[in-house]
Length: 248
Image (cartoon, rainbow, N blue to C red; front, side, top):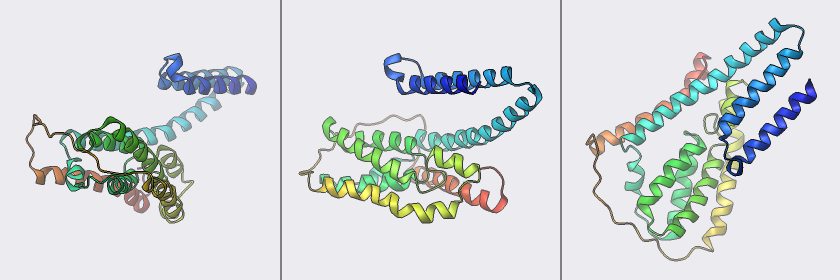
């Protein structure tokens, strides 16, 4: 039984890693792995009641993570749908590549500590279209965003799915992870930025600003309220969990 489950797991993860050449969505593969492993386990186990109890316990733990991510993504999508992230593009006026690189990197680092790293990368890369015209320059800055977002997502309990899972499972605490991982995470960002500072030269060209049509014409004040309310709500989650001990 154990050998068969291990084989299913290894083959499944191999299929996830080869998602693009196989053209099979990794979410579908992951669900199939889960179904097959539990099926093999319960068929080989003499105590079906025990296996069902174990399955219920695991589903309960997973549901906590899924509900948290659904709530967090809803907040992010609401802010983005009403141009709440426009506040970021408005404050970035630098066109010198080196200065812009540091600004983008630091913003991505701290934003990723509140959002998850994937969401931060998507948000900031979409904003780069409004800041940088040259596709090659955008690609380079997108790489910087990926590095910064992954570094920033590691030092808070809500910055990455992995740390969130450990946090919900009470394997790490909010204060401890922030205290011990902030400086190493910052080093992961600063080292490549220092290296690139000697490589990047010149300025970036801004794309022409086109008139955008929105279903709802929100004022700058309303967009700012949405942005800070969304960020504040996400920051409040670990505080709420710490004092109430309820699942995030």
